[in-house]
Image (cartoon, rainbow, N blue to C red; front, side, top):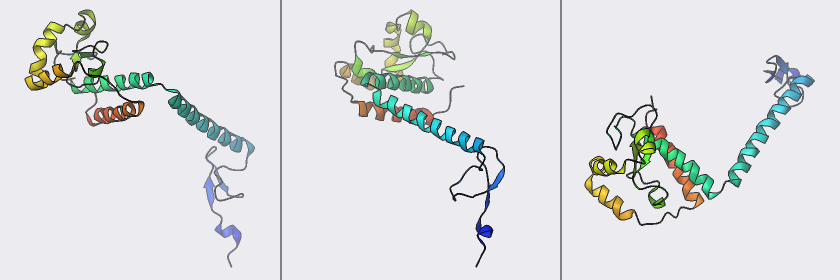
Length: 186
């Protein structure tokens, strides 16, 4: 019969990194010094509390909070998609900072808020200072998306946006995946 001491292995303490012999159980991860045990316990509690706080924040989010999050992810997707293209309105090369400009505005046409054919890379000057520069946007949009897609977009403008919180969360995941699959902005 083997001696108990022969079957016990030494491990490295998660806190002080010194080798120790497990004395309490095979699940022991720290040496027996009080400072290491307390430090490890504190680390576990803080990690658990951070996870609980994140879960609570997620549960407290309203539909509007989810829409805002989706808008950020969607705009990031548009910026990645259009980074090599010129501004949709003035056709100047887009700088490092540019907007995701909507042809049909979010306020007037909320159903087209997340329609990829309605949103394109637009320089800050056109989007913010020229209020979208819509006359030039209208001239160049059919060339960018095609005449048929342009007509479909126009026919959808009077629809409704009726996304549930679950659908919004799903769209967030979809657009995060689309952003990941594209090359990063340089």
